[in-house]
Amino acid sequence: MKNMNRRGVLALSAAALGSGLLPAWAQTNNRGTARVLPSLSGPNVDLTIGHTSWPIGRRSAHAVTINGTIPGPLLRLRQGTNVRLSVTNRLDEETSIHWHGVLLPFQMDGVPGVSFPGIKPGETFVYEFPIKHAGTFWYHSHSGLQEQMGHYGPLILDPADADPIAYDREHVIVLADFSFMHPHTIFKRLKQQPGVFNFQKQTLASLLAGKDLPLKDRLMWAQMRMDPTDISDVTGAAYTYLINGHAPEDNWTALFKPGERVRLRFINAAAMTNFNVRIPGLTMTVVQADGENVRPVDVQEFQIGVAETYDVVVRPADQAYTLVSEAVDRSGMGVATLAPREGMIAAVPPLRERPILTMKDMGMDMGGGAMPGMDHGAMSGMDHAAMGHGDAAPMDHSKMDHGAMPGMDHSAMSGMDHGDMDMRDPKNAPQVKMGPGVQMIAPMAKDRLGEPGIGLENVGHKVLVYTDLVALHPNPDTRAPTRSMEIHLTGNMERFMWAFDGEKFSEVKAPIAFRMNERVRVTLVNDTMMAHPIHLHGHFFELVTGNPGHHPRKHTVNVAPGGKATFDLTADAPGDWAFHCHLLYHMHAGMFQVVSIRPLAGEAL
Image 1 (cartoon, rainbow, N blue to C red):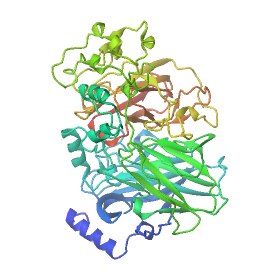
Image 2: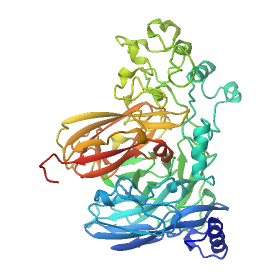
Image 3: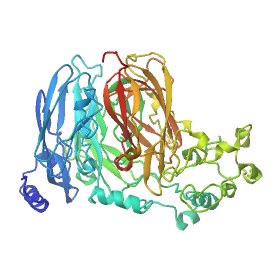
Image 4: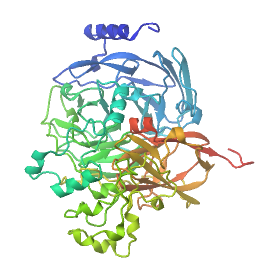
């Protein structure tokens, strides 16, 4: 296999598919594929990364798989044990596995060029580390764009003692997006044409029908060269949304017995898609977030950012339910069934109307929400030249005709220096390196942790928000931070440029440095109009949500557009750790940094 070319690999894999050699759980069955994921457990686990032809709906696709499946096998490891994971690379390029959210020595974290050299073709690398904690996690490639092609899998760390969450049965639910287009082609097209996959733009027909924004609001957005329907970079135009490796038409089914407490472990392993998850007719009790137990909270829906995990418990009756993972831009959905018997189905809800971004998502919320009625011609002085949009002169806020802004709450602006409203004013973010990669600086970014996420503001039922999450156990470190820092999430959506503080990773001169065991308050400011799931390797941090001592501990936080998110970090894991946006193509474009944690001279690790 090592010397076989790609065509040979595909031919061999296609023959295996046709002869039924794929595992039974992976084969399409339109009546419902009620199969658990293949599972492996420690202390010694062998994994092989290779090429596979994989069925996606009614088509076969070239995929990069782990042990020949999408997702890779479910790994079950136990807290308090040591594990040896031998990973063999059968690709013709370097690969890796990162154990997402797991606390381990940085040399085992699996990020090529940061924590280890990567796994060369034909080589085997042995990851060895102790299992220190329990919860729902996952693993994936940190090499190139392999994750988009199927290189990911679920990871459950079972507690050494009794689990505080009571349940009778569980199912692991891995959400993902898959494209028949090669990921490097996707990235190239994103760089070449803004909104290339957005097939839900506003049209003349929607204007005449009274949908979306009125004409004057559309003219304002056009003047700023921004698109209020640009919710996701890659959409259902290019993606099939998967649940446990299955397309919606496969009707993958999770079985239960009526009356059981069923634990559903949701993992968002998508490359670029934040999902809205619901099970019509069932209340979900959220009991865990990012592998950390939380006080139970009942919801009808939750938004799960890329790389986040949520565990919920449901009590289904003797009937079938549809499990829906709707893409945040509502261009498609993953669909599965929760049922007491195989072959059952339930009604699949239609896609809901796609959301429209507002001025709040631009970091310009002045108390008027979307500010309907605002005379957007007053923004004609915006410095579009600095945004890469032409030669318009800088905005002179002293000459803004505020009387031309009916409907705007000007009382919210009393005493405000109008210079603060300049969307390119470096005073609003002095640490940001201004340049073509910084389209805007959010002038009035606000903490949005108490909001339900884009498009879920008015759905008419309870939606989980970050401020609902309260740690089940007290936070292990409640010291006050000794210093604070602010990191801006910057980008140019037209040019598909993404970075922290205006510097993409290839331009960064030094890592973000922390002293061992210091306590730091970090505020992430999203200067873009797109949500960014930000992940820190090797640590949990406490989201500052107003529950001191019981703040939710997470490893990934989805920062709303034009919003802020603050967390407290105890830098207690020495080494070099990746810190990045988990939208794969954003990370690939440069929204990536290294966090370096070292003791002071003379201090012990």
